[in-house]
Image 1 (cartoon, rainbow, N blue to C red):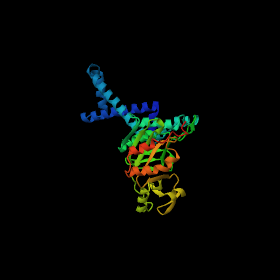
Image 2 (cartoon, rainbow, N blue to C red; image 1 turned 90 degrees about the vertical axis):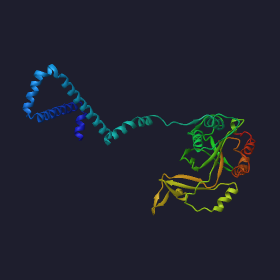
Image 3 (cartoon, rainbow, N blue to C red; image 1 turned 180 degrees about the horizontal axis):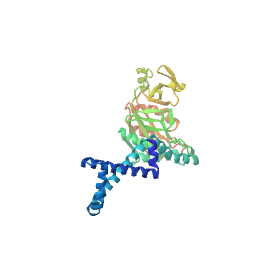
Image 4 (cartoon, rainbow, N blue to C red; image 1 turned 45 degrees about the vertical axis):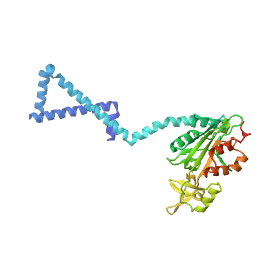
Length: 349
């Protein structure tokens, strides 16, 4: 089969094969004619000669024209069928992939990697992102409770890049967007939607219940309030229900950390060890991904690194306010009144 394909790809060889196919089809037609007329091959050729000599030039030209069109159509169909088979062959896929990947490889070798640079202060950068994700209102807040809407807007707010290679200018930080709650605060470097129920922020799996976008009198006051439902335990650890309830009453948080290795959950200790017992055998877990879940209701804010809320007073007192919001002991308007008291951060220039 391969040698036929090789000949068929050759410009001369393909024409020879096409001519041979036409000849065989014509002979097959003559054979059918001889059988139907009870004649042998020699008598059939004699009749064809007489036909061409006496009839064709007068009234038979249209028959030969139709027959030629039929043969051309057969050849065209055969060529299309061959091309379809050839595209499905492994050799074609290899050639296609090589030609497809050749340009990017050569381009990557010749061009240096792109360096991400930030030129805006964190408060300005965050304000622009918030305007992109939550347009159409100012000086106030707006609630969002649809999971699809929440995920879509947060994808815009937290799209890449979130961590830059270089900052140019005064008061610039290469990790401009952070989350804050009490004494806990970290830069946000990754966000993606896992499914309809969950999103991933850094290593935290979040079941977001609702969010509120707040735009203050000044751009540097902007923030996003995020409230999450309690998540289900992984089953890797034992948890005391009393401990979970106590942490909630204390306005705290209760998390469990674990790893994911080839869709299998492993403990945090196994993740740190780089090895886990799987089907009775210790297996290296290179490439495992670290994850975290919050097992009680939880809330926090997303804002810029140099926002007014990155201060000692917020770190000390905000746990109480966040806890009261979850327990419905204060309204969100009362929370906003407290947040508006914080002055501009001295690092925000």
